[in-house]
Length: 264
Length: 284
Ligand SMILES: Nc1ncnc2c1ncn2[C@@H]1O[C@H](COP(=O)(O)OP(=O)(O)OP(=O)(O)O)[C@@H](O)[C@H]1O
Ligand SMILES: [Mg+2]
Image (cartoon, rainbow over all chains, first blue to last red; front, side, top):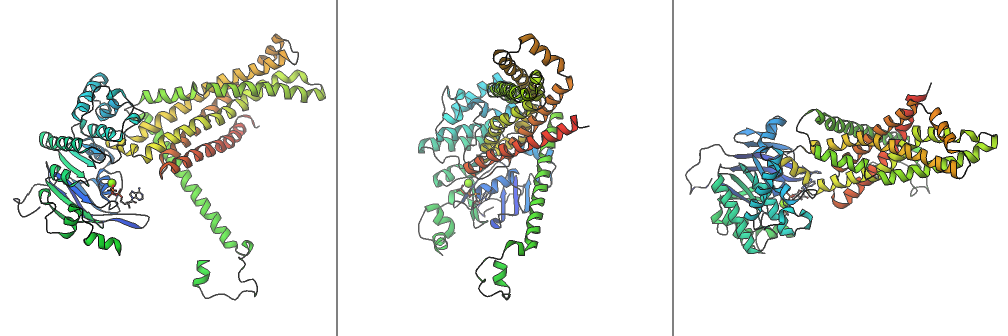
């Protein structure tokens, strides 16, 4: 990916080529190319409304792109049968930007929903398993029996995170995992995500606006701007990449190429 | 209008330049609008039919969700009972009063029991229960599933190895089909009881005679046709409730619109199908 690393010749876990999507004639994605290598953690940056969430939803098959290819383990998911696609999804986890917890189910059932759906676990086991998973994200006893609607926003986010990783997926997508959390809890969650990737050997794609978090979580980073990936490189370089767009974004400066485009 | 300004302006009658062209002068627009509406109707009818078939096809393919079926079944058959029961009792009472005062004009008061039981079992039981359930259950299905749609919960189901159609739609469709006949059977009994109360307490019929008139006159077909109607109406309410919710978009406002659409469309469809089914059962 960057010259500093030895060239990686493996098949990318996720490979996007020329991904395009418009809504009501308004282009959102305009030819996105992206490679995510197996076992690595990719951070996607970009301004609000640039299509980061749409990109992830395309990969998951929740939105049909207009054009382009999406390969997972070298196989185009867009031409797969429904069954094959479901099999890919079985190995995938997703944390939605707004949590998307099922409010008709108690928290513990939310957390172990996938394990129960796949029949991998009994209901009693799932209850215990959920409590352990909740402790991992800093939620104590009793939360498991509560309704998602009665939790605070940050607590819902953490439950959603626990749900996304409870099935120990191969590929995990996190859409703004630390937004709405206090700084310490944010760091804890970052640690959890890193742990997931390192311990489980999972491949992670994270969307975040938090640069400290991006450097902690990410091996690699990519910047989405105006419907394209304008930069990819090591996440550690964020802030001094030499790319004016990325540097302005990473430092959160008002003046720069992005602000000028806004004004025009 | 936009086309008129783009094209070279056609000569018009002086003094009428600013008045809008009368609609009757533009028959092609009417045809176009009619065609557009027809295509829209066909397209959405086709989409709903496909949705229904997909939902029902999951009845044949595991995994199943008995818990969700049971919840929807109870919601329809048990928790709608107070509303539907009260509707039935009062309808039976009114029927007895009305038919008594109407029939006494030509000395046919004796037919009150028969009129009550026939109207209730054949028509009013299923139709009124259908309308009540559409307001209660159709709206609830649309609002719940619509909220799940706009908060990404339906997408979340997909990523959690669960087919949202199988999970959200199929159990509700089955519950609608099975629970409504049960509910209507109870409503039939309560409706007849309402007529019986008025007949014996107010109109001076003897209790046993009223019951005998009711039972002697009633045929199996009267009840069965009502229950078949109930199953169809239950299916319609569940189908349109889930469909409107499933396809809703646009936040709280979209969910509100979906709820309204579910109740209005299922109510109208119930009345229309009631005619069709009556024709099928009883027309000679
Ligand atoms: N279902 C949809 N229908 C119409 N437009 C949509 C839809 N989903 C997304 N969009 C549009 O696509 C654009 C990108 O949305 P997206 O949610 O991907 O932004 P984002 O990069 O995740 O922003 P944020 O950082 O604020 O979450 C937005 O302009 C949005 O209006
Ligand atoms: Mg987003």
